[in-house]
Amino acid sequence: MSTINPIRMSGLASGLDTESIIKNLMKIETAKVDRQFQQKTLLEWKRDDYRAINNNLRTLREKNVFNLKLQGTFLAKKVTSSDENVLSATAGPDTMEGSYSVKVNQLAKGASVISNEVNLGTGFTDGSFKIKGGEGTEEVEISVAATDTIGDVIAKINAGSEKTGVSAMYDENLKKIFLITKATGEKAEINITGDDTILTKLGLGTITNPVKGQNALIEFNGQTLSYDSNQFSLYGINMTLKKEGTTVDVTVAKNIDSIVDQIKGFVEQYNTIMTDIGTKLSEKRYRDYNPLTDEQKADMKEKDIENWEEKARSGIFRADGLLNSIASSLRMTTGDAVATGSEYKTLSSIGITTSPDWKDNGKLYIDEEKLREALTDDLDGVMKIFNNDSEDPKAQGIARKLDDMLKSQMEDIASTAGRNVIGADESSLGKQISQMETRLDDMQDRLVSIEDAYWAKFSAMEQALQQMQNQSNWLSSQLGQS
Image: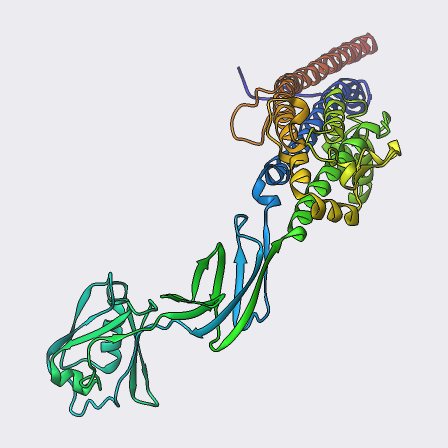
């Protein structure tokens, strides 16, 4: 097929504004394409909003609900030290509650060596010496050349520190070498052997092997204990020693603050979802505001485009069945009673209630004082409201029910709107959008054909008129000659 455009004759014989006529005729055809584009845009908006809701549901399930399913969330312990400058501590969920006395008699230290003053004199001679750390380390031979500087020797020591466990530095002002082990405790050692001449020049010739580190020594409730590190675990308490010679009181108790924070995080994310869904379900639909085409946007200011599209996007989920189902399931699940064997069976019994105002979209509100009282009074009962594991649906914890429910709803949204992944979108909306894109391409091609057809007809008319005018002029000239 030829790619050369046909000659378009624009009113040469007729005097008509052919271009304007055809442009007006094409507006009718273009309107059909615009409507198709607008329908596709509405579906894309709906798909994107569905996916955004799914991301919020995923956060609720994988972060908030997951944490409330864990016993460790409710068994969290808080450790307080009477002097954080001497000893700091943390605890796991299995740590026994109670008060403990810890006296720090000695901190754990690594083995260390400070050389005599380095005196290279006329410099090094070729030779070597060996360094080895404590238990579990390797001995490394340090080769020294006559041309080496003290910096070269220090660099060679440090190059082998991963094997020896010993690091070195040189103080230019003191003219001394400092050696220290990475490890602490009595098993940490520094052993130096080798060429006496080189070791003497380095100020290490008088070192008596081995130089050992020291263990930490504490009195725990009057019992003397020894550790090779200043960080250790005792009775499930993770302690860090910082200062010697002081007695510290360590107290382990329930971490009510941590539990409350976890529940607050759940409620906050839950409310975000309920507000979003409730707003979308009740939004007004502005049917006179359709998605803008690129041509329409070109004649508008950015703020006007933003305001227009806000109205165009409003109400596309009004009374949406899938969102209605999600909101209803969330309200029903959080409102369930759980057979806990405790006086605390519902969220409302521990201070988490729903507003009676339907305009509030089913948001949850926390009476923090009541929640803390329930957690202090019967932590186990409150925990079961969220994570009780039972084959009996009436005894199943709310977090466990939500986990199953959210998984199912997220799959429903994914089958409707797809996922943010590379590849073919086989969701129902994805298929509709793909079909519309194909249809739009066909319609665009048809527009070109229709416009070409209009031009062909008008051009043919112009040619015919031109021929008639030529014939008329010829006849007139013949009659004039007669």
